[in-house]
Length: 299
Image 1: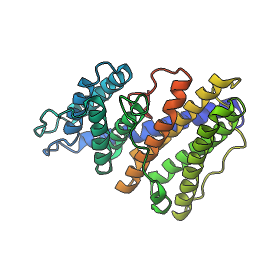
Image 2: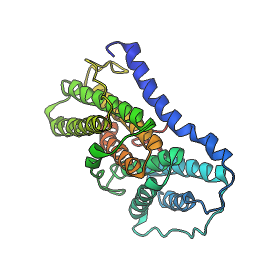
Image 3: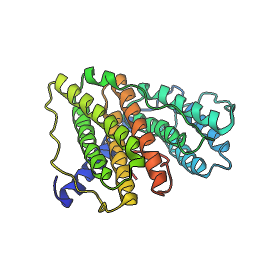
């Protein structure tokens, strides 16, 4: 993809892939009848509501958490399943403790979900993880867990295409980090090196997983055209944040198309890693909000 039209097509494919992965299961969910078991997302919604209530004075957190509450409530109401008792969740430690609890609850719930719900829960966890990097009052939070198991995870069906899309996003991110290096001063050297290394590791894991599953990893393009010209430091920061956002969308697509709980969990960790890497670049570049309410989800 050496032309602008090809680059835009690549971005559309990544976004469309995530959207298709998350939207398609709605048909089967609606046609399967009413599930009489309590809705597992009801407790996550209660925690999100409690966390949003504790976010007074933290504008970025309040905005993002309000968006998460709305998305979770819409999904819980959509299926209209029985709601188990969800007592008010204590906010020990204020917003910091409540935010950490919400992230942990979403991460724990993710592997047991499927399709759209897996993407939604992964996005909530990633949004929390990103907010934890905004200010000391919210975090710092932990970095993403290890993705080493990805290399030996058996990919089948739609998960093969999803990981191919994630691999394409990793290739692009590595190239973008190299481009940005020419426009940012030495003070950013460590962040650039660390970011590039993180994407290289995920690239290698994707390639190994695809090969082990009998698929041929797609090759990288010779060059990529940024959505906007990179001419200085601020535009370099913006394009890095965009590349991280594209990678987040691709990994959310993996979470929504994963055929097993292990791959869903790994995709969630990769999504978290992208969002936590993107947040400082968005803040340095003056982008608002510093963290999207539901990172990776189609706008």
